[in-house]
Length: 482
Image (cartoon, rainbow, N blue to C red):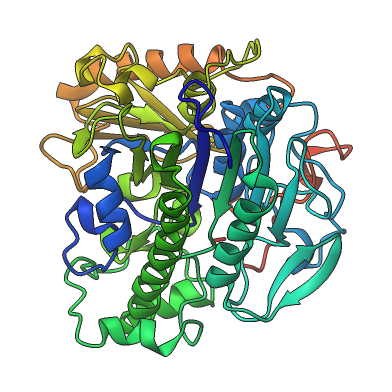
């Protein structure tokens, strides 16, 4: 019944969709009901400064799987696909030729399963490395009647999608994952992604009937906010129904996670399974005057709520319990860390952007023992470097530079980039950013000077004669924040 060899642990990797770093009870939100995740943090280690590689789903997910930045794996924006009238993406592989975590694990004997949102192109059949496959066909959509792939067929899911993703994951655990070999199960919920209103069971919504939602202050709309008609703009105009749906979707996901963890306990696999929880990218629900993430604004933003995400790791006996680490950790670190915990070496990769944080998780080094004291982020022609105290953002096209002193201004309201007293800090961080990206970008896949707009990617890089055919750029459409 799965592996009980500490040298070859099982992995349960759970990824939510659009969950801000504030959207977790154990992170200090006393309004949000996430008892399972709070308990998971008590039993494990929470990484309080864990950053996605890009503040939008498809690029961020590509980085989680490959350990590369978007400018080295080629997924630069969310993939529009069939939901937006784009050519059939059922067999279009966006990560072709790249080695992912499940491919390495499968090659070493792990049985790999997938349940939930994929959003990296080809989804009709299992992605390389996977033996079990239940995948959402697009990047968003309704929670009832969701578009999914089942046995290579397009179907409409009759179940509430969060429950369906949980139940399919359980099918893997009772089926392919129940053999003697270790398993790797990737569970990718669409929660708490929009739509929020009229999408969730009443008993979940009722949990927040009397909630004040003080944890989501509705600041005045930021001048950069993109007012495209849809769920996000509706939320700015009338936040309460959307807040209730956002919170309810997280509580429903939390209940699904409880079911999966209960299975591990019943099967005697608690001590033999590494459980990792994180999100693809962050999100704001009124904070900073926006609803959304990186592409909620123009210019694209890399504010903390967009780039920082929840992260929890539990492995009893190996990872200390009830510990919070403040070290800067990148989503690109997940790929080498999982392989390290599995006792495997990552394949040689000249563009690898991540490093294992297994020693940090095991408590073998303190936060200050991390060699990496900077983290980096990108979204097309917008890039960020962040230290413990400072954040610098630059843009390839016309657009403001940004510099924030995060010690004095954690909400990033005061841009110091043009302050004469901060010029030396700007120059230092500019050099750090330039030098680091020079070593972590595949020139063929570099997003820096490409017309990435936040409106979506249409084809893999190299699939069109010119870059303008790669990204959506409708002149009359405001940005859709997928």
